[in-house]
Image 1 (tube, helix red, strand yellow):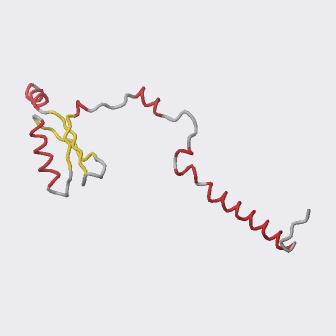
Image 2: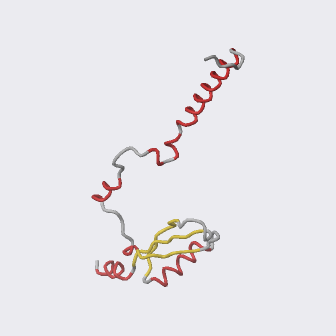
Image 3: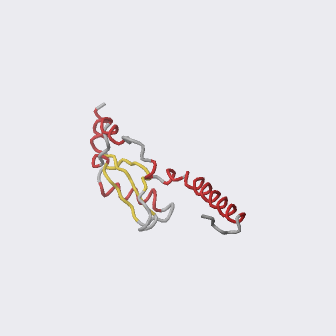
Length: 120
């Protein structure tokens, strides 16, 4: 048991993020165990950068990443319906525009029956 505790104390957990170019978003790639930051960067380069082109790579100790607690996750839920802020919230507009155009065509048709003359 003493050996396992020594290994746990020696290695740290790191998260590796990368992006293909400067305009691409950072994406999480994998986790790794390393004794220090420098070795973690070397391991990340060896394991990842040789497989595909990489424009930038970040190696972050897992202890330095903060995540939202379960209690705070409740705060992230929407309080009310705000679908209009998302593009899917505008899906009804195509149907509404079609109805509007049909109404306009009907008015034009009606006006054509009268010869285009308004009677007052």
